[in-house]
Amino acid sequence: MLPIPAEELNGSGTLGPYWTFYRAVVAEQLNGWLPGRPSVVLDLSGGRGRWSGQAAQAGHKVIEVVDFRRTAEQPRLRDIRVRQVRSDDLAFLPDESVDAVVAEERAMSVELMAESAMLDVARVLRPGGRVLVCVDSLVLGMAILAEQGQWKHLTQTGEVMLVPWPDGGITRCFSSGQLRELLMGAGLEVEWVRPRTVLSPSTVDHVLGSDAKSLAWLVRTELEAHPDDDDTVGIHLVASARKAVG
Image (tube, rainbow, N blue to C red; front, side, top):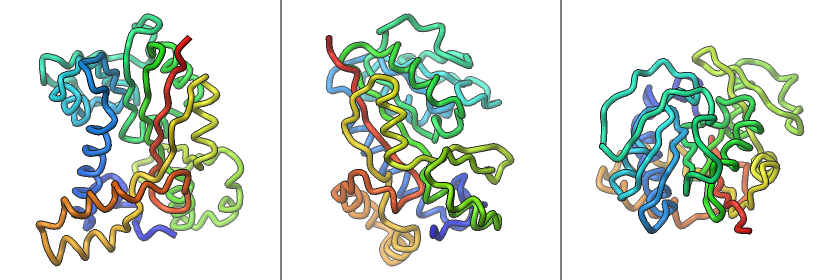
């Protein structure tokens, strides 16, 4: 199973080096994924500003939905190219009005009605527009259930897996096939599905503990792995999909 105890899953605890590595991987993946020309980017990652700020610094106009995951966080002033909107859905956006959608921070796992949310994402995307989605994996879900002693649920991987989260919420965990179905069910063309990271926390901790300057090498090693459709490793899956033209 996964060598990450539940209390570590929100990016705190003793695995600080791993989460530093993880965020560096996400930043590089997002940097390579964002449109090459100035575009309108919709950020559904929960209002934390990390990824909307990165997109704005890359020259894009960003619409950041700060309540998409029903967080209690207050809007904060950031880059003038980031427009923050407090909303529970995307009804405020017209059809085909954005070029790209970023749903990081497990947004579609926290949004239990993910199918409906993804249909709305497809609606607001322009033809040729893309969406980047990160979700909790079945590997993570089974690890949490095992830690909770919920053994009878561990064989139900063919069904929708809803798992109690350490903070009292519920997370929806996906296999790579289920994530593909989520995207294709909204009429999107899946480009790829892969684990966010394949390097284990123990490996990252060991390497960084031996040489703090090895972070860039670790990130480069991770990005070169590209284990598409392998959902047997990693706490999160990430996928890219495109809206067809015409």
